Image 1 (cartoon, helix red, strand yellow):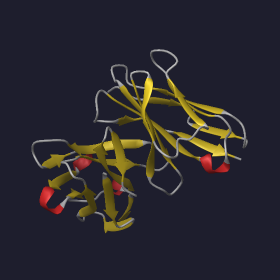
Image 2: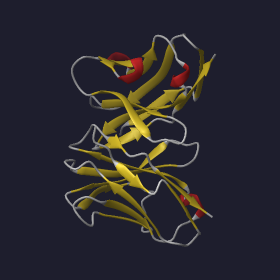
Image 3: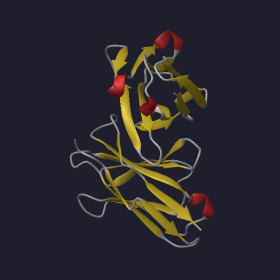
Length: 111
Length: 112
């Protein structure tokens, strides 16, 4: 069964610093993986997705993620954090035609 | 860009009352979903719907819950007799096939 683990329920970074949000998956077959962002009192917005092909995936707002099969990871990065990046981030895996979400990581940006 | 539309954005109901949450999926999508997020917790799968029938449901989706696609555009989630623990954000999603989900902005249900 598909499962998704996000390490770190809260991450704080300084404005301009590197953002790294960790996600690991477990699956017996190559998964489809997603990162969603949720701003306060809003819905889920797709940041990026990996299905097949290139393992480095670029998304919106300067985010990218790299699918590493050997590490069963799909970590989300952004070179330089902006105040507007403060939000909750969810990693999700697709299996059996439904999404399984991680527990989320709340990103705080320190001015 | 096409959107999934959910109404209302916020619903307050008394315990034991029936509620219907409404969603308009993207018009050419074939798979529809409801997910739930209890405050402070992760997003959980409730049910998937394809070809006018439920294709899969989670343990959460008990007899109190039902889904319907009453016409060609709406997709509804009904909770027959709400409980306090049903308070959550409910998200509708649609996809043209098995992946690439578009989520609505959610309905916050508060049961008092």
